[in-house]
Image 1 (cartoon, rainbow, N blue to C red):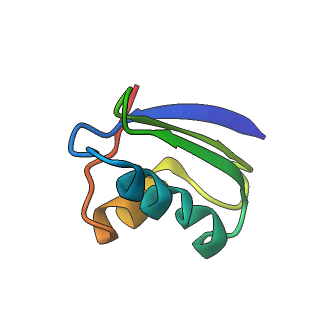
Image 2: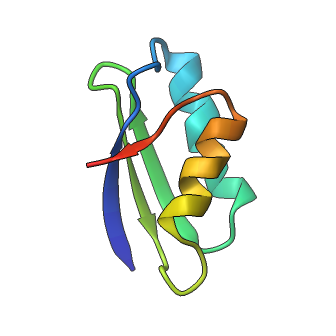
Length: 70
């Protein structure tokens, strides 16, 4: 398991945070997502053998957000 932080500059409310946190249920290998619209960041803990950064970025994009690895 690794933990990675992504900047999400277009996140602006708690609903945005909830949308991003729902990626946890959609991608196998993600243990936990914590999104903060105050910080405009999300932290993802995931199993790198099951899911990669590109898949997480693509899932965020599908929900309408840009996720930039820090």
